[in-house]
Length: 333
Length: 274
Image (cartoon, rainbow over all chains, first blue to last red):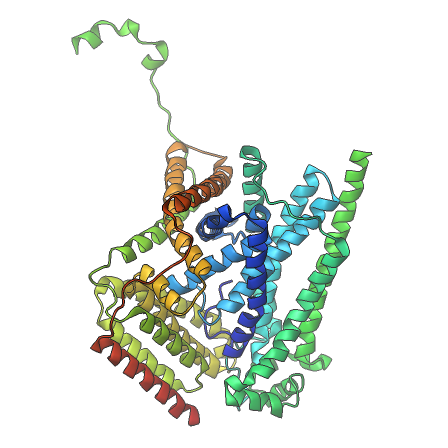
């Protein structure tokens, strides 16, 4: 999921970096509040741990191996804010010293893996854990949280890729950066994550938490009880708002390259110039006739798919938690 | 020898039985792979620490700035010629460093470039030639530039450079600890991986949970290490503030580097007009 440089436009990178600044500020403040001064070194050691975690290969069906990101795991162990800082530092070292992930794309990578992944995963975990008060509920939370976390992060990366051909084209209508629209980028990112990486993440997260619980219970982070409605709002808003905000900033930041702003303006608006590119027949979009037939501008298409993805996930999770809640209720009563 | 022959009766029965236990073949690719990837990271950290003599000859903060500028320009430019010029320059610099490091830098950049080429192949076939070729060459340039920086400059010098750019102390501090503890915790997990391998004779079905155990132990250990480290800091009066001691002067090589980078900036503007 590490996005290298040049897949995203510099303006997107700048927008994503700008989006991370308040998150980092809040995270540092929160960590200072929550964690006593004596544990500040833990942030660095935690970052080293999260870096190493990505070195742990886990067997996959079919004889290959993969590695987990462990963002949700770190959030459950140390709290989402500390996880945010740890993953950020780990990503920084990967980008600067190991050439894994771009320097300019650092903000985007942090947004996906240091912000969306741990926070989303953690809140899903916390939500289920708080509402299903049994051991099973907690494990369900771990499973769903880590699975959702990595997949939402992958979705964000796919959205970042997918808006590139919409926003940045040259005169001939050819994409300047990542050439794949949402119809390609979202399945390409999500299918492997849904089928493979997500499962690796779940198994690894659950196994480590079970181990730590057995060996040293009480080392877990204890966050405040999560309010249901607020989280739903946050999650839904976050996902739907991300591409929108990006799009807006992408246009506003057009002065990065004079040509970019010209294109966006000549298009009338971001929504307008996509079908134009399709008519030219030279564009990659032309091979996706479904889009043209339905007459849906691609920009609307991606928003739709983002909303649909979130909605399906919330529905799925609601049904599951409902089922579990009944069971847990029976156990208690 | 006589003694042993004389009193076999003293030996317990089970020792006298013939053993023909043949361990079942078990797959442990993932353990090997994990060992390898941890090992790679560790050797990378150790290597950069011992490169004192052949280290960067360019003033590190300037090198960092120059690399950042180059990556920025490459990312922004629409001119294929400019990207090619940058690539040629990077290859020229590459050719001047020792072969061992050259191979390592090239391995990474070639790998990522190849991966990009594969990703871009469908777009290329479907007619989007511009971005497929541009992105592939640009990726090569950026990864090579980063590789040159991280392989020629000591990492401690890199954190020092960050301090010069007014990076907050807490960030440098965390970064510093992280690099050191990747080494420490990596050593730790490496030993546990070896232990897992040595103790898995024949089929070991619980290898997977042992893997989780290794990660879990590393986490618990890291918590303890962090606390110990705080006490060590307190004892030595370190408050997490960094000061730069040496005042290095710019040499002619640094001026040359600045001139070359300014040249790239001019080229970028020149080709941007076309």
